Length: 148
Image 1 (cartoon, rainbow, N blue to C red):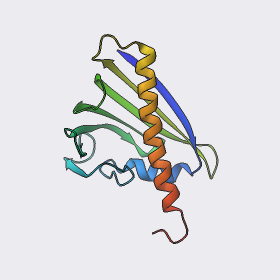
Image 2 (image 1 turned 45 degrees about the horizontal axis):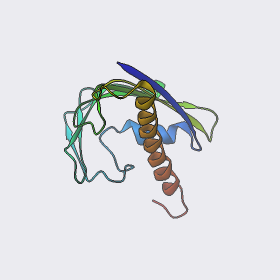
Image 3 (image 1 turned 180 degrees about the horizontal axis):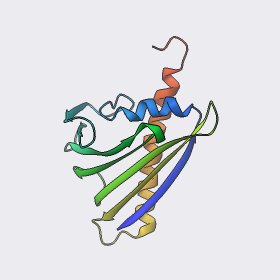
Image 4 (image 1 turned 90 degrees about the vertical axis):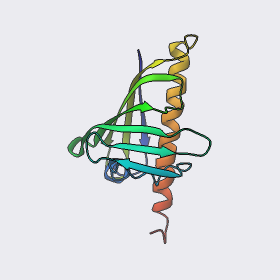
């Protein structure tokens, strides 16, 4: 089992970023997700992500705390990375009224025995960078003049 902790500053208020991430079933911020099936509701719900050329990815909401702007999720099926036992957590922290810091962490086990911890960490860091790039682009577009 390996783990990684990642953090990144975003040029948006914490409440704006949390508003995007707390709605676990809404992936409007993620280009490439063609359809989201929602199975259940609240803690324990599954969002099944459908993307072109891939098997569906099941992400299960394990915990969520609006007071601390945090949540955790597992991916029991369809993870597009060479890992298993994936459990991630995310937390949004206000820096000031206009900026925040996103904290993302996970534990998982590589399925490729030749993958060392540094390679696994680099792959996961790239994944979280991409996720936060998408959130940042979505919020930037949403804040453009005339955006709804």
